[in-house]
Length: 403
Ligand SMILES: *Cc1c(COP(=O)(O)O)cnc(C)c1O
Image (cartoon, rainbow, N blue to C red):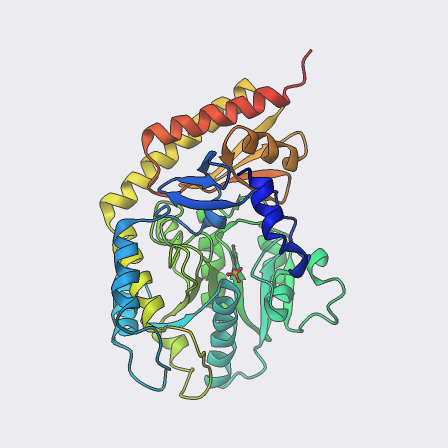
């Protein structure tokens, strides 16, 4: 049966909110770095469900963790102690700056927890007027009303009423503007160490160090949104560990459950201590099933040998992308990124490039700035790196403007 026939037979798409631009393709299963479509075609997955399935599809240890916990206990509320949650929190704190963790179900929620933690910490310390959050333009922090206001992107805010107050954006990377925007009403600076959705744009370590210093001098908290950069994506468990600048609060999500919905907000004691009993909550957040899967994921990714390999392979892929820029200057303008969070600045509309890549059996993601985002699984083999580059080359060949 062709993918089209399968999709027509299902014909349920009209019952869904029309808010996604979906490609006419569906997958029946996945194996490691590969997705198998309903028509049997195999695709190399450099999209990973948007930086989620870092350990690939059907990872045996994760299938085992899911099945084992699934047969034992799925859910209890946070009104009781949850040993699976305590074990993951201890693991995350042992591997990071954090002293305490709050578990959520999605990235936006974890960023909201981070914002609430920062404001509450200022309130708790006797500065209730410190509630503003300063951000960089182009940021993406999620789709809830507060995280949309934090991201500040007009195209996502349009038609949804007045944006939530308390957020101020300055131009990306503009440290003088950031300096000027931070005042006596500022609670925190919120940023992505590498902006993902808006085009794989990196803040340099020196800029992050400057911001850390500014925050320290003025009693402002520093929040990193590592929803996308976290869980090994940049070749470190968290991107901050590669730049030597430590936040007070960190939100993470995408790769944390390898596809099982789970997110976390990490904080130092100073910040987390303000979140007294009753100040925050979540029904599903941190339930035993999510915790068992996330813990196994973190155990695998946090291994230094594993992370070193991600850095090596990310470097190899980046070198290959630079070669593609050299070989196809009328298609690709520049390679960017870190680890397995990579981008190619395109000359033709990025949607065209994505389609050409898909026609050649490679899945990728759009980003702002006309950037093709490449988010391969961290477990990608050296052969698969070469195969991915070969398929991207074929796509570029098909788009080449002949002289
Ligand atoms: C994806 C993303 C979010 C939102 O995560 P959801 O799980 O979709 O709510 C927030 N911040 C960053 C940096 C992201 O990449």
